[in-house]
Image (tube, rainbow, N blue to C red; front, side, top):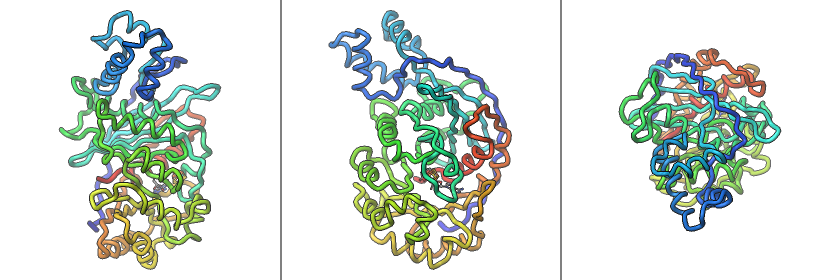
Amino acid sequence: MSAIDVMTPPKLKPMPVSQPVELSPKPSLIGMTREEMGAALKEKGVADKQIKMRVSQLWNWIYVRGVSDFDAMANVSKDMREMLKTHFTIARPEIVEEQVSNDGTRKWLLRFPPRGAGRPVEIEAVYIPEEGRGTLCISSQVGCSLTCSFCHTGTQRLVRNLTAEEILSQLLLARDRLGDFPDREAPQGTVMPAEGRKVSNIVMMGMGEPLYNFESVKTALLIASDGDGLSLSKRRITLSTSGVVPEIYRTGDEIGVMLAISLHAVRDDLRDMLVPINKKYPLKELMDACRAYPGLSNARRITFEYVMLKGVNDSLEDAKGLIQLLKGIPAKINLIPFNPWPGTNYQCSDWEQIEKFADFINSAGYASPIRTPRGRDILAACGQLKSESERMRKTERLAFEAMMIANHGED
Ligand code: SAH
Ligand code: SF4
């Protein structure tokens, strides 16, 4: 596919939603592994011989039925429900704002309560329905400790890692709002997507570097793909990394989801500037890790993301280098038009150049879809979002939203 798919930007209708959730010190059952949940129940006095059954019951209510209230658990005794309510929570994060576009794209600004002595934090999740699939873009950190020079998140410091609960909550909340749990309807006032347009895919392409928050991301993704729960196929989960090589090996061995690499340059000198983690894990090591990624085949390819920066990495020489670099790796290439943000010195490549670049790659036999420029227009529309957050200023959020919308997942 080489055509630049220019679409009419969706008009986002702001839809204020208020669901203030009490800041609760109670631990959430969401994001616990089965073992952790069992241990937590045991600690509260549940008899050993009941633990396995209780964990299965709770797992089903939380992840299959999607309940967010212990009282909805009809086959759990009243005493047990009271005990659960006293000690645990399964509440969703607060929705600060929900925006719904005409084409079904949705964005949620979510607030998570403080952890320890910290403050509440806000992040966004974006849902993009397309023909035959719906992709949710999830964040793994608030801010990012890496400093990719073209990325606005990279200009913010890392506030903190999200917990497994907070990562999973983005998925649960999206499914709530889309009426995507069986026997649950979307809350009143929500625009239902066309049939079949629900969360079928997730991409860890929101804010943060998922492989710098490995344990929580791993726990969350294993729960998301658990066949007795949310049941998302690992082939429909894509984790995007700037190239944290040791954790790429671990991702293959311990998580087994699809991999996307933020490549953006094919020479070490340039990649050192664009994606500075390259100084620690240069291209050779990165490519070795990609080649060793388990289960690769034509049907299971690594996605290489390549942001098109005018006069920086967009020459045909670069395209040639890209083909050379990826030789022998089952790969797809995602060309991402750069989303400018206030203060950046980079510019997006001209469309003509992006097309030339894409044609070159296509003729070498690679599919290289070009991301639609929807994000740019949404950048303006997003000015309507309000935030109390001191941590993430409006401009930072706008660039981040645009990036997420621009980079939503592949098959
Ligand atoms: N930290 C991870 C995942 C989040 S970033 C990573 O870097 O892979 C998701 C994608 O958006 C990455 O490919 C990132 O390089 C890209 N991106 C960041 N800023 C961008 C911008 N301003 N325009 C276009 N893409 C951008
Ligand atoms: Fe962090 Fe990814 Fe942005 Fe780099 S591109 S600063 S790793 S979020």
